Length: 260
Image (cartoon, rainbow, N blue to C red; front, side, top):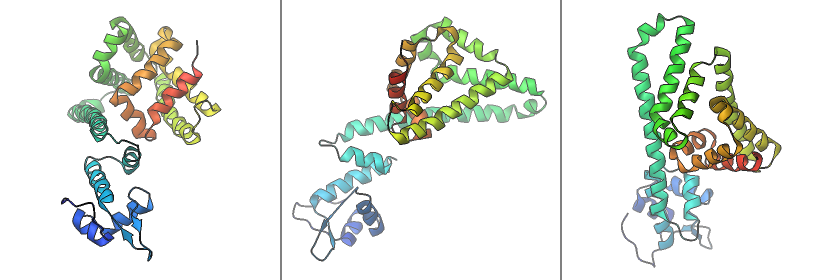
C-alpha cells in the first residue's frame, strides 16, 4: 500500500482501490468494529492516516493466516506488539505443520500397508492401532516427555497403552472427545470455577490417570497444564478444537479444581 500523509481523507471506494481490497471488505470491517472510520455529517465513511495504518496491519496479519478476532484483540491493546504477535503465530503454524507432517507420514504408511492391514483380524488391527498411537506419541512428544518425566515413567505409560483392552481403549478415546466438548461448553460460560469447569478438570484428571496410572499426582497434573501453555502444539490441539483461549481456560480450570 502506498504511503499517505497525515491529512489524507479517503472514501470507502478510494481506500479500497488503494489497498486492493473490496469496498464490501471495508464495510464488513466497520461492522465488526475492526476498522471503524470517521463519519461525516452526511453519514459517509472517511478514512484518515490512522485508519490506513491500521488497515496495513490488518492486511499483513490476515496474509499470515491470523483470524480476525485475534487481529482485533491484538490491535486494540494500548501498545500493539506486532513482532511478538507474529512470532507467537509463527510458532503456532509450525506446530500445526509438525502435526500435519506426522499425519501425512501416518497416512502414507497406512496406504503402503493397506493390503496387509485388510487381511488382519480385528484383534490384530486393534493391536496395530495401539502400536501406531504409541509410535506417534514418541515421534511428536517422546524426547521432551522423557526429559521431563524420565524414561521409566514414559516406558510404563507406553506399556499401559499397549496392554489396554479394546473396551478400555474405546473408553479412553470417548473420554478425550468428551473433554473437548465439555471444554467448549465451559468456555462459553466463562467461569473456571463453575460446576461444568470442575467437571472438565476432573475428566481431564481421569484421562491423565489412564496414561500415568499410579504415577498421577495433583501437583504433576497442574504442572502438566502449565506446560500446555508453553508448547504451541498443545495450544493448537485444544484451541483448534474448541476456540482461541481453550488451552488457557483448561489450565485455569485444572488449577481451580485439582488440589492436593
